[in-house]
Image (cartoon, rainbow, N blue to C red):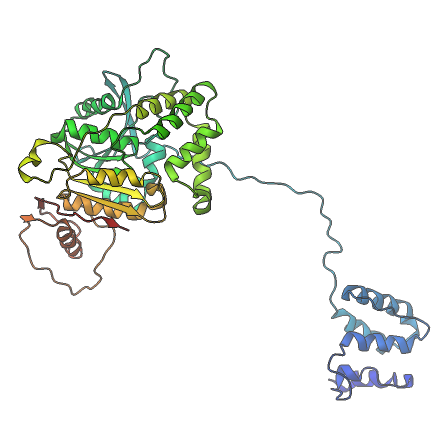
Length: 472
């Protein structure tokens, strides 16, 4: 410390004690808990013995009291001491909230989110059928192999498939395919209420409507991709027209007729939708149907999006007709035939099938029943963990499974992820004639993608021998 400043300390020597000693020189006799603030108050008490300093618990009150003492006794103290005290008091904390006044609070609520149509990538067309018109959305180049989708109850192609097919891995996959999204009659967004005399098609008639879709776009065969009620419709179409279906990806598919509990709940939902609209009971059932239980704990934002969608964007009368048709469905009447001599009799689905469900979905047992009725040589069952609505909650796992499934069926697709990172990998030229195991074909394609962007060879799959269940 400069000597000139030290002289100002000695000018208060007439007080009988060097009161600034604790702020300049370490004093071994004083307790370590004495603070600078207490030393300053002690100095002020010697300078003004008639002023009683009352100690309060809050530090801010002590600071204010000390400032008032200094302001009253400033004229009685030397100029140097007054300057020193001002410098010391300037380092003390001050309440920065004294001059702030809260006048009002303005609440801002987030905007409700809805699935919206992507007008840049998707175009819509009306297809005339014997049971009315269908809205079909086309996504991709129509000159490429076709994937035909069908949605579940309460949804349409926008709310059911658009987010999934916009997923980054599926965007890469769709460079090689064209997707045709079929909407059930009256289920598209903004659809007018169907006439009262309109007879809604049964599940078999909804499946036969796909004949008109294929004829309208000139499609010889398609790859089916269905969820819930849509998966049941695609399965019925594949049973009647197996030559027009190359493969099926079924999510939460039910192959049996409705039980008494489901029939009672759905009939009650139909009554409420027709008379009162989208009630809380119907909304709760739809959320359970798609997500299972405990969805709000897993993904609160997703729940709010679909709740708002069901309440504001769904035509309740048209939905009641679709639910009534679904609850009156018949059994698919398929059975696994273990006798190889009778497999060609068409007792089960003859096309390759990947059967997917979520571990938290209420339809797990239904998919297990379907898996037990399929041919194990051309079908596989997959249960994805920690989800109920697999397309929304686990799009990465579904897209990866679907890509490998298509590769196993002979479709050459571009891999979105690189499994082999070594640059020195050499691939021996193989003759891609017939590979019996689709996992071997998938591995082969993954390795070839390290050397070139596209693989021009065509893989011909003769069999898909997967008998065990696959759990992700």
